[in-house]
Amino acid sequence: MQITTLGIDIAKSVFQLHGVDADGNVLLRKKVRRRALIDVLTELSPCLIGMEACATGHHWGREISALGHDVRLVPPAYVKPYVK
Image 1 (spheres, rainbow, N blue to C red):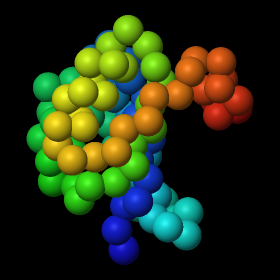
Image 2 (image 1 turned 45 degrees about the horizontal axis):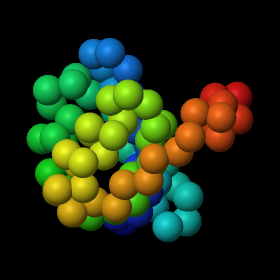
Image 3 (image 1 turned 90 degrees about the vertical axis):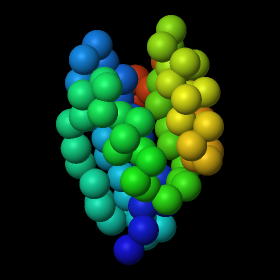
């Protein structure tokens, strides 16, 4: 199985990763420190990555796009329903 979609919850020091395959099966749930995020994402094959568009979201989007991933930034108003 291969991760096709990855969601990243950006926080101050620890990021939460949630990866699923094409069928929606959870393949990855991981806490990653800020400085280890790029190392973890270089190990993954290119996939769709979604994260909240915030002040640092744009920076991380550029960094992750440089690795070959397809990054989508979601407006904060649309993220709220996923919290529940």
